[in-house]
Image 1: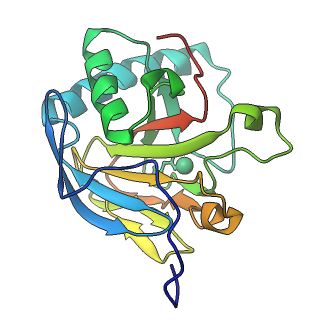
Image 2: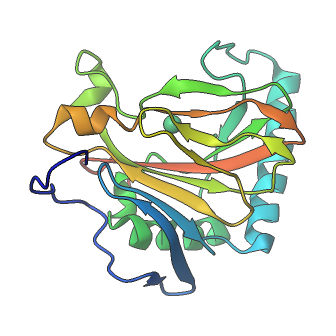
Length: 215
Ligand SMILES: O=C(O)CCC(=O)C(=O)O
Ligand SMILES: [Fe+2]
């Protein structure tokens, strides 16, 4: 919000205080941008869960490379895999659902992205354009979870807000774009800055306005 005190729009993220108690974890809020809401969260995933997600994805990425047929995109040079549900992934998704305050059936499923040095995700919106068919049940909020520490680069950058979030293992950044004001939604433009040194692994959850998959 810039300038004088206009009335704030309602948010999906309704947690008060600095702590979110889920069934199995206490997540702490460490920073917040008010409108559009961007929240930096600590202790979202344990280090063991981060490692397990990386192992899970590494194995599948390798397999998909052998299979070939990976689509090449200028916008996103990283590679990704969607997680199939199993017992431990389901328990993570349950926590995420509580955190994002949306039933898990509204989720696209968790996607793990890998960036090697030089790879990036150029500025984009997570919601689909009105003209696309996917916008009929559009995305409304995002959680990007950092699965490792990046030696250099790889920040999640919000250029319109002049805000950068540095990847840190177990932490996450949450933001939403379900405002009546299209201008607010468009301020959530964001990018994964090029990784300079080391690897970067993130797991992303996008939520839809309506249920998207079977539970
Ligand atoms: O890698 C990042 O920091 C951002 C990822 C992202 O924008 C997405 O998964 O939609
Ligand atoms: Fe994104």
